[in-house]
Each structure stands twice: as C-alpha cells, then as structure tokens.
Amino acid sequence: MNSAKDSNTRLAVIGGGSWGTTLASLVSRNAQVTLWARDAGVVREINDTHTHARYLEGLSLNPLLRATTDLETALSNAHAVFVAIPSHMFRSVFERVAPLVPAGVPIVSMTKGLEASTQKRMTEIIREFCPQHPIGVLSGPNLAKEILTGKAAASVLALDDPAAQWLQPTLNVGLFRVYHNDDVTGCELGGVLKNIIALAVGLGDGLGAGDNTRAALITRGLAEATRLGTALGGRQETFAGLAGMGDMIATCTSAQSRNRYVGLELATGKTVEEITNAMNMVAEGVKSAATVVALAKQHGVKVPICQEMYRILEGQADATRVYRGLLRVVAGAESEPG
Image (cartoon, rainbow, N blue to C red; front, side, top):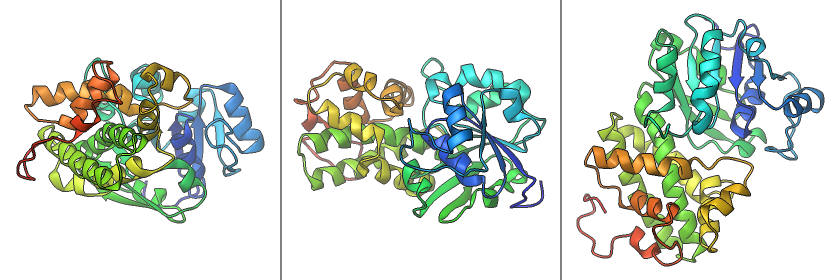
C-alpha cells in the first residue's frame, strides 16, 4: 500500500464489541471497512439501521460500514486486519482467522489483555499463527463512545515493521489522532496493566477514599506498570505516553470505564461473579490480574497494588476491609516499589 487515505484500501475488523465497532465505523470515512461479528442480529442491525444498541446505545454508525458473520467475506482482499476479540476468546477466534488473512498484510491487535493459560500477549498469539506478517497493536485512552461522538482522542499504533506504517494516516479521522511507535511490547502491556489499577481506583472511589488517594493510586500504579512492563521488554518512556499514562488516567477516572465500574461494585460488597455476570462487556482487568501477578513473581518485580487486587478478586480478602493495603502503610523512597 502506498496511499495513506485511498478509497480502495480495504480493512477488516474482527470483533463487534464497542471498540471494534467504533474503529470500524470511524475509519469507514477513509477506507472500505468490513466488520466481522458472530451475532447475526448485530450484523443485521449494523447493516440495516447503522446502530449497535447493545454496546453503543443511542449512537449512529457510518452508513458506509458493512458487517458480516462470515470470516472469509470480511478478510477477502483485506489490506490490513484489526482484531478486537476479548483475550479469553482471542486464540480460538484467531486460529480461524489466520488461514484467511491475505499474504503479508499487517495484523493489529486492539485487545488489552493476556492469555491466562500461556501468559502471552495477543500479538504473540498472532505471531504463532502468522509469523510472516507485520504485527502491531493499537492502544491508548480510547473510550469508544466518546470517539464515536466525535470528541478529540489520541491513540498509538505500534508496529514491528516500518513498511506497515502506511496504516497510521489511514486511521486518522476527524479529531481522532493516531501516533506511531515501534515499542509493540510496551504499548501492549500498558493497555493490560492499567486495567488492574483501574479496579483498585474504582474500589477506592466506591469506598469514599478521596481525590488524594485516587491520585496516589494512579501514580503508584503507573510505577508498577512501568517496572513490570520494562522487565517484560517494554521501554520506560512508552509508559509515560498515551499507551501508558494516558490510558491509565482515562481508565481510572472515566464513568465509562468497565474496570473502574467493577471496583465501584466491589465496594458495595458484591462478589466478582455477581458483578461480571450482570455486565454485557468484558472487564479485562478481572481476567488479567492472576497472570500479571504470576509474571511479576517470575521476574522478581514488586506489584503491591496488583497483588492486593488479585487477592480481592480471588476471594482471599474482603474488598471493603483491606483497601488500606493498596497503599503501603510505611512508605520508603518514592523510587522504591510499594
């Protein structure tokens, strides 16, 4: 591909959740986009009424966007593929996608989670099946409803192959600005780790901890994410950018944040099962906490906030009683873990 905004550019978006649908609708202004969703009712609604009431209630989608339940139709002749599938389903869906992806086209993950059974990032799963393709991640403070309504937002597209950089301007639409980065690992981990901190912030907000506590948790949480992220191969400066600090702030403070919502509900005394069973979207922090804590232990990295949230999620601690443990009682130097 040579042209940044070519009406003949064909993109496939795999996953009809809020973020996948939002990106697909947005970029339909620059390219021919086909969205794959498994629910035939959702596909009919997108094609017939240009809405997606389940995840994006009250908002209109680009009428140029087409949706399908057929993977072959979605992927046929695509110049790039975006995958927005929840982490616990990512492998099972992508193993069906992989044989249908046209040779050599970029594949970009939009999922902010880890695979529990292997501890792998989504781009690592993609590489298992498609080792000859450029691979990347799209991450940042991207609350879907705000972006769909046209509010200004920024994201980061991290790619492992400079030849795929033509994608960046293709994704710039209206007030949605996409920056580039080559730290795929760091950008991807920033999106994973902030979700667990958002659980803690939501819990604190629900218990009336206050603005100072929220600021402390976000700051110390970012330090945890940076320590673990760099230990796993990301660059420190990435965690000070949109995919790190930016995404952390949005997820920890927005009323639209699923992970913050789970924390708020934990503060009422509900169990994790009660909360997640009542949600129609996935809070990736709930699913990633155990894996993050295990990775931290393997690499000798201290992540006290993530550790405490893991204990709460596993039922090993009462969320309404142990909240003070999220910030260490005896503080050392700011550069120290804890």
